[in-house]
Amino acid sequence: MTDLLLIRHAVNDWVGDRLAGWTPGVHLNEKGQEQAAALSRRLADWPIEAIYSSPLERALETAQAVAEPHGLPVQIEEGVGESRYGDWTGQSIKELAKTPEWQTVQFAPSLSHFPGGEGLAEMQARAVAAIDRLRTQYPKGVIAVFSHADVIKAMAAHYAGIHLDLFQRVVIDTASVTWIRFTPHGPRIIRLNDTGSLEPPKPETGSDEKPDEQDKTEETKEEKS
Image 1 (tube, rainbow, N blue to C red):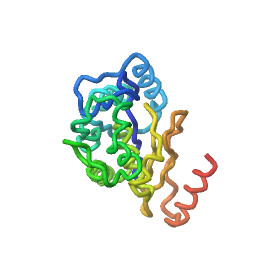
Image 2: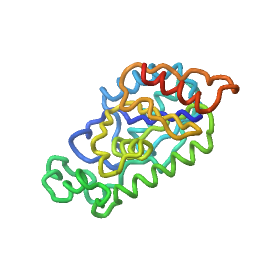
Image 3: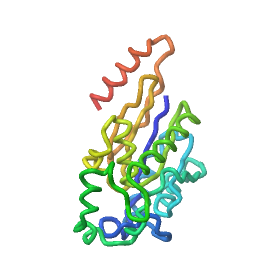
């Protein structure tokens, strides 16, 4: 089984105000640095085997804070980079919300395409492809992937079997953790948008346990969590 931690970068001055997109030089602010340090402490006891990040500074800085106590390098994965907003990059969210195109992004995202950028369906496809490559590379253990709100929302929707047109119902806060476990019987979303304390996964049960019994045990533990 692969345990995937999808982690949104910590806060920066653009969050909630403008679409940073792939704008270079967007760094964590003071609060963001505090969030990243707290996240590092939360995940210090996790047996993380590998850490991957979007190439954007805000994601990299958050990833580096978590990687340091584990002694792991942060590896770049472009596939989980932010949505390519094209002409919308750098624009005010308040102003964009007045446009007809914004309504499509909110209510029919599978049909949306950012002017001069990519469609949300394209973003979801390349992000899921990146995760599927990584979980094939790490068929067991824990991997952490640092990304962005819409990208994580789209991946969570995909693995939950939710149509992309409903992905705006998912909320992903800064420095939050979404924990997905890939079992032989499919993905299990164990935590979504978690900003509290997270216990590391328990060791796998013995090999004499039947797969369906093992899944049932896992689900029971998750319901009680």
